Image: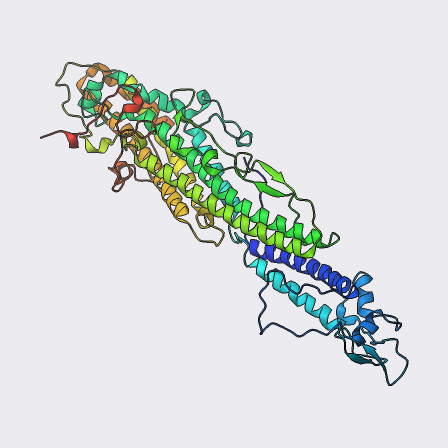
Length: 568
């Protein structure tokens, strides 16, 4: 489920190596330009973007003086340094020596008119200064290299593999919760197992209809409902599963967005450096892996429309949202290239302009990313706990409100089937939360170009932790619901003697099969307790399933209550 991206956790070193290639190519091309301009008796550039001050200014050899002109273009055979440049700069500059011949044979020299209109003496030999100028070119090129390097978005230490792994985990967990790739999803997301074949979804569907066993019985004998008329545990199963699957799908999309920002910054920086290097010297050896082009990035807000919440998937269980692949076509839909330029100043200017534009684009992406994280946070804060982590059965008397006071009956075999399904659902959840916890391996890598966690990154980690808490709470409540159901069935079988045989037979089967022997590292009772979700205020018109109205996602419009809500 991943696209192509730059791996490694020392990207600044990669950029530095690429900039060294650029420096070498710029030095080569600049020396050619200097020789060309000197031969044409023209001035040449000594800087493009680098700063120049008295501290780093070095007086140059006067190549326009009469002795210099005679040396460079006279009958003395020319300058060895010029020949070295025109011959392709083979070997090092330090290995070149020049005798400084001017072509003058008179040991006393000759008087000629200099470029300033004054007479100058040209001796047979001079101290050639071309080596000094060509040596300074390397320093000028290094100054340009440093100027550009310190403007680059580094994205140095982020481990894209860790972020990709977290993304894959969220997609996999979402699939078990019934998540579906909705309209507009990337083709690189892959496909899910049909909902009908997802075991946890099947358990949720079975439990969401369990109220048909008789609400009176559940309220009378267990803590799974506090009222015979209002919503209880089973009514919370569908909205909880739907909202959890929608939330984890959004988490996957947001991790993909962070990854796409990192990839855009890394790839495009490297591309423009390599473009500039090859523009200056097409034969320059490149020490870094070549990238195909600069990547076009889709607006994050349009690719990840979190503010609209999520809808129910094709079946009754599971959310459907537009999912984006990791560094895939939704966020990074195309790669473009640029034809090489050749003018030295134009190349350096364009490189710096592209780096500036990239930084501006990255800043915009960071703002959009943070906005979408805030949208998810607002959406989740608008969903009632009942619709996110199951009904809080811990607020009720676990033994019910009044055994047998009403004239109702139940079938122990059916009741224990429901208890077994609660256990199985809880055990499934017990396998989900450690996987979610493992995504913390990516925490340190959710950062911006400078390696700092943004407000969006911090909020996203809080949402991930919150989601882990919802899953743990649901796990605990399923397991506690199973315990209460079994205890109630035992009590009921003692009152209804015709149910005792069925109870004992099923318990023997369970003991042999290990049903109910949940070996969780969690404390189910502790995790099932009432949760403190801070100072959030669910709002009635928010777009996600269920919203601020407990039980609204069941379609019956009922609210709910626990014993804690009932007046004494």
